[in-house]
Length: 315
Image 1 (cartoon, rainbow, N blue to C red):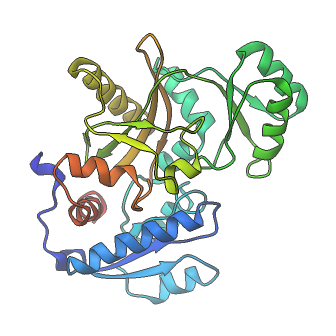
Image 2: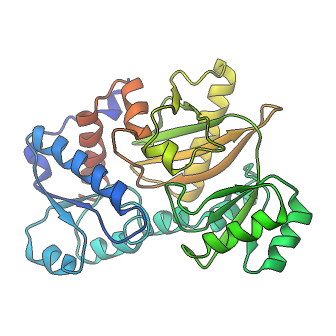
């Protein structure tokens, strides 16, 4: 384990820490679990921390409470998309994770892909859907199977694998209930990997396995048959290639502090970038804590390391 991963700061150095969780996004339930886990870890470490479930009275609480820094554990819109980061910067409250631009960019799957493409980083071919005619055109251009995604949601919410035009139209209509912008991507046949970054270092990749058609919400948070492979199963050269691709992808977006990238590998061994999450899950099923354990950090050490980065980057 690198010395830089672990925080050497005393608990009192953080001051009074507000853990921001819950919120109003479609990922509220996951955020509540993540936030409570983070809060418990901070309190057990001796940090002066308290939780705020981000609701209608949030601004009043943010201004009225004494807060030295904020630990953001809000997944999805309102917490992971740059809006919370901008508010905290206006109030001059240091916070964990990426800044306004990187948060907003990573939340937008379409524009993230466009940035990667401009730099020659591999990401699946895609199209934007706004009508049934768009679905038919995408089917002609990309072929089947395809994966449909709301462009601004996480936790696989609203996603569906489709095998024909009729399924594609139904999936587009369903995804449209979550987001006005819907993306469809070429399906990559092969294993999926998730790779966490922490304080500028890439942690050991995790290979994912599920009997589901893809790594969906149920596989992520509810199922007991999801497989997590650490070591990930790649040989040393391919694992290093995957880690280097992840580092380049995160640098392109402007990631700070911590994040998690999702990558597919096709039958020829080529890696394909899917997305980057700037506030990954911190539940008992979550992947960043698994990767941190493989790097030598327990959950409490991981939480303190994330918090320490807010001190050093913006304190």
